[in-house]
Image (cartoon, one colour):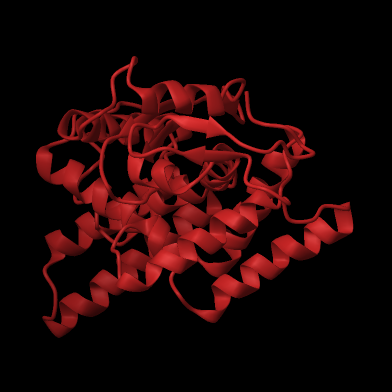
Length: 285
């Protein structure tokens, strides 16, 4: 609370200085100050509520694979037993699109694009999901939302003070989308999410080196300048190779090596997979 008061005082001082110079409008500065304070005091429940509104809106505008679609059947098999992160229930859906992407949000929504499922085997898909869920577990998605409030990217998003969650307008929903899906995480955040994904696979008895093979696939196709957040995270630059080496280092320490054979093979864009050679860690069930 002391920090909040400090921020308020700082805002008032800046408002006074600006007003004496005639450089700013008092009303706009006051609004900015209020949003700064609100972004610090917004609860986890409020963040989840606002993000959930955005996800519902995005689902309505996207081509979501129905329950009996092979992509959905495959994803449900891949994530069997993955139900929550830090007490937040997870829900999974597939977007039918050629884009290669996946994301997880602070409300527990995990969305996987069919283009990514076409590219990867089951273990690699689960590794990417583990990476994205890591951003939720590490509070990266929640902090991105708060940062957007501080920078006014989400104009007037808080409907009222206190714990009330107001309904968002289309423009506010769009601002949330820009903040959440275009957010570039820091190298430290990406590294921490990589480690989370590695341990995510390891805890499920799956060779965590599938994280590295997934990264290599993403890195090999990300040179085209794709705008989505996942592809930006694996753009063709030295940091990608460093992240792969970090996974290799952890694997070597834990006694893992690269899989000797691909465990599954995608057969076209139906989400169907064909079993090939077994690997020592088995297949996702």
